Length: 311
Length: 311
Image (cartoon, rainbow over all chains, first blue to last red):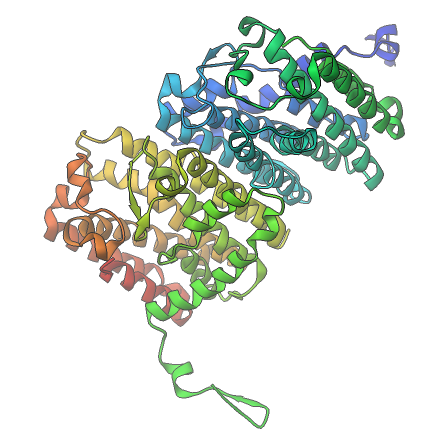
C-alpha cells in the first residue's frame, strides 16, 4: 500500500490480485491466535497442568480452516472480520474442533497416537487429563462467546455452535461413525454421517460468520449451501488423502480407514469416482456463492484449496 | 387451596407453614423434569443410542439439589421461578452436573461402578459412548440456555455456567482432586479444592437464579455467600457420609475415600470436628440470608437439609 499526500492509493496487488488460500489462512490464523493469547484470562486460578494440556493441542497448529471459514464468510457478507464478535466466534469454533480431536483420539474411541505431527494429548498427559482438557475446551468456547461477542447476537452464535457440535451434529456423527465400522453404508448413509461428523461444524462456521456480519436470509442461505458442498468435498478429499498421502504429509496416521473397516468414499466410488465427486461438490459450492459476487473471492480460494490440498 | 366465588382464598397451610426441604425438592424436580421432557426437540436426528445414554444418567433421579438452588434463589430474590429463563437455567445446571458425574466415573478417572443406585453410564453403554454422552450433555446445556432463556440475560447465564464448570472451576477441581491423591493437603488447600470441584457449580446455581430474578448487587452477594457456605457444608457432609452411610443409602460406593488416599475433612478434623465445621458453615450460610428476609425461607430449608441429610 502506498500513502500519498494523505490519500490512500491502493497499489496494484491490493485491488486486482486476490489473496491465495495460503495467504488467507495465514492472515486468519494470526487473528485467531491473538484471541488464543488472551484465553488465560478466562482460566485464572486453573491448575497449570490443565492449561498446559489445553494449550498443547490448541496451539499445535493445524490449518485453522474453520476459523478462516468464519472470518471469510463474515467478509463475504460485508461484515467487519476484525470485530470482537467474529473473532470470538472463530476462536470458539477452533476450540470445539480441537476438543473433538482430543476426545476422538482417546483409546476408547479411535485410539490414535499422532495428531498434527505430534503425540496425541492422552499420550502426553494421560487419559484422564485428555478427557478433562477436552471438556474444558468446550466450556471455554461458550464462555468466550458469552463474554466477548456482542450480547445482541451472542445467543444466536451459541445456539449455532452448540447445535452443530451436539447430539444431532458432530458428537452424533462420531457415534454413528463408530457404530458403522464393519457395516457397509450406502452413499446416502455415508453422506449423512459426514454431514453430522464434519459437515455440521463447517456449516456452523459459515453461518456464525454471516450472523456476525448481520447477513440477510439470502446471504445466510448462500454461505450455508456453500459450506454444505465444501464440507462434503473436504471429507471426500480426506478419505482420498488417507490412501494416497504419507503420515509425514498429514501429521497423523494414514491408511487406517481400510484397516478399521471404515466406510469411505473411495471404497464406495473408487479413487477416480471419488475425485470426480469432490469436483462436483466444489462446482456446487462455487455456484452457491454467485449471489455474493466478488466479496466471496476469499471463500472461492478456500474451497479450491480444500479440494486441491495435499495434507 | 380453596377457591370460593371466584376469589382466591389461601388456606392456612399456604400462608403460614413453610414447605419442608423434601417438598421443595419434589416441587422443583417436577418443574425441571418438564424441561427434560422437551429436550428431545434439541436432539432431532441424533442417534437413538446416544439419546438413550444421555437420558439413562439424566433421568436416573438424584436429589436435583442444584436445580432447586437455582429456583429457590430466584424466589428468594423475588423472581418468577416458573419463567422460561430460570427453568432453562435449572435444567442446564443439572445437565452440567450429570455430565461431570458421567465423566468422573470413567475408568480413566474415579473408575466407579455404581451411581444413583444403578450401574454407571460406561458400565452400561461402554466408555466411548459415556464420553460422548457427557460431551453432548454439555452442548445441550448451552444450547438450551441460548434458545430458551430471555436473550437479554442469556449471555450472563451462559458466562456463569461456563466459568463455574470450566478450567478454573469444576473441571479444574477434578484435576486438583486427582493430583492430590496420596498427598496430604492442609485445611485451606482442601477447601480450595472443593470450592472449585463442587462449590463453583453451587455458587453458579445460586447466582443464575438471582440473575433470572433481576436481583440487585446486594441480593446477588447474599445468595453467593449463602451458596459458598452451603457448598462447603455439603462437601463436609459428603465426606462424613462416605464413612458412616451404607452403599444402599447413598446409591454409590462408600468408604472409597480412605482406600484411595483422598484428603477428607474427617481425616483432617476428625469426625466430631468435621461435624462441628459443617454446623459452623450452616450458621454462616443462614446469616448470609438475613437481608433477604422471609422470601429466603425455602433456601433455609434446603441448607438445613444439606447438613442433616443421610444420603
